[in-house]
Length: 144
Picture (cartoon, rainbow, N blue to C red):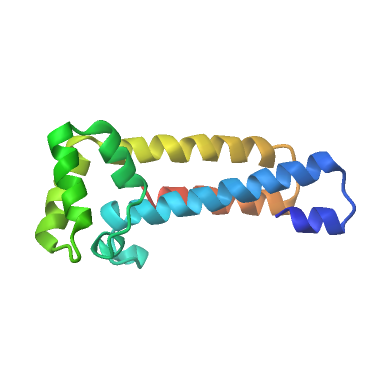
């Protein structure tokens, strides 16, 4: 997002804000993508459990490992150490994600980046900032 500001010879403060905004949007996108793998719905276009089956350790799993008991961590790690994970494994992981309310933790992460992004966008009173706010809100609403 900072490239148009650089090309437009804007001051460093604007370039820095737009760079931060771009990073925030990238992080938000990744958090949403990670979340949809476990908490999504088919209409959002992402197959539930795809990242899990592929063995990708994403934010929901990282948060789970931080909150769960040592014995559960051992089981989670053993599941991810397998060459292949099953639907039974996915159900077990999903039950732990629910038990430890990991979706709420993910929403806290999203809210932090949402708030930071809105602080930057609210500095600008133009059509682009309005469109970016709309994109931000619609994207995040997919996780609720």
